[in-house]
Image (tube, rainbow, N blue to C red; front, side):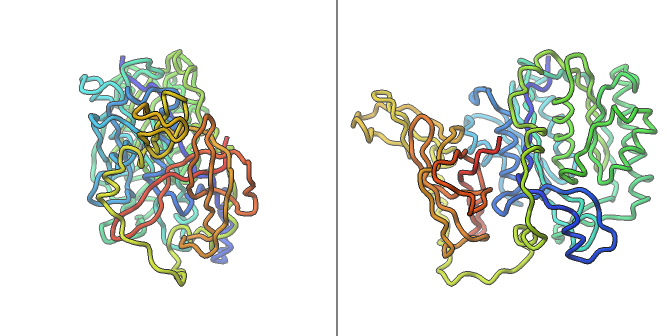
Length: 473
């Protein structure tokens, strides 16, 4: 049996009320709802990593032998990003990593590739994670509609929670939304053409193909999921397919926004959270064609509820104070640089040397006295035992804030820079930056957890490492 073993998601803590966008441009037509906004130190890679970590909850990461990353907004044009995520998660080196892009259905294409790989026997457990952080031109509907987020599923032939029944694919060159290699912002064509010439023609064709292939009728489907740039398009396609409104999965358009490549996986995760054994999910992804995949939910689904998922992340939020903060976080506003020396060039050789302990936040624990230590040590700092160490991960450990400083003079995109000293549950101490916090609310002794974030960009290289943040849920 091949299918989905586990699922996960990530939605940024911050939300922007769409009324703030309308207010900034004095728009007479405010759009209701809000959208999820990635913090200044988040991007598609860090969000995909967070979703993959959520997906891997309770699973021995040594079992994972593949990681696929899908996005139309990766931080690199010529460098694999999936290897960075795999490194941050501390996965084995002898696994298959692959990046998928170029289409908003890249996540569904990656999912199908993972299903085929596991079915063929070339892999046993493959994480598929997708995220996007798309930019839209100012004072347009897409600026209000685009949101940020990530979804992830673990494809496996063991402990399957949702069995893969079959799928149908249509590939067709169709210009609805696009971004060329010379564009910063997403472009779109006329709405009626997108709806009638594309979405409500292609999606029903692919879904009907999947239903026919699996010998199913519309009433056999418990949840139908699909991405869309406009919920009205999805409802139009659903009506053609004769799906009842209750069968159509929420796209989180009013609470998250259009998260691009992430939405097909995020809606699939949302359906898995709600469904029970015996239910049938038809998950579709639309863009330059359509993929339609059918899954049958198994009793194992009840054993993978212990994670943040969509529900947990939706319930935990903080509002962005204003439109100006959003523009600053997205790097669309030029801020006068601080009167400080610039950041030094990143040492690529040092990054490579530190890959075993720096990227995955892995230290050691003394087998003689049990003391965890970071970075890796040969001699125990407590009992002085030599070469009595075992690997120890700090990335998944909760901690408490022992000391902190809000530095208004440090080089940072959004001052002040909160430098923290944290003591981990079970032992170990680390100095790092703090994120997703309000400076005035930071207090000594507060509970924190680790999160993989963007640090800075120097010489064409994105630097990533771990920061602490207040425990979210």
